[in-house]
Image (cartoon, rainbow, N blue to C red; front, side, top):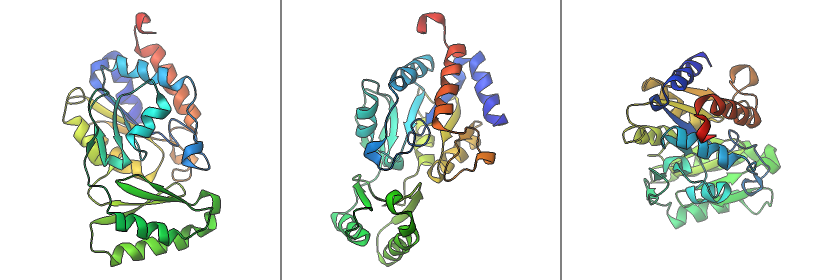
Length: 257
């Protein structure tokens, strides 16, 4: 955490020096049994609004969720965002959502749903640019589900990949990643020229951490099913929110609070 603390401490002295990237599930909000069951704390939208305002808009959500779903959960707050692991991209709150990858073919979405079978404990989530199969309600089925999906990808003739996550496997185009999304943000105002800081909890965030480090910034890890407690910078999403709130108290002028 030392590198990221150094980046953030520099930002406290010079707000225009930092760009902040935040994962959603497992980072800002606690992991739930199903995606729909995840709850945003009531104070989260206002906290994010303060952070975005203080950073002159250089704050972005970088999530596996579709951007429209993030907007719904954080209303009325909206900001720059990358959704579906970078397949969706929005430079600022007023911009339209641009697709960085074509939607998955309907045949692929149907095939993946069939591979998941009719077990009600396996939740199939169609995101357009990706299709996810959540197995949190039946964790023992994870290895077999992964094998089926990997076999399917190897036999397919498309540019597809299986992206493991926290009790979920997603099939998506191989040309997108959170790291690519962060790099794209960092090439454009108001992010360009700043030092990027990413906070995330899962393997899908690792590519974003790597891009941040390459651009002179850092990544902060949240403990969970991917990062062990002794290798993480935060114990939980609640600790992330508390830390961001404490930084806001130091970061912003009184009239912004």
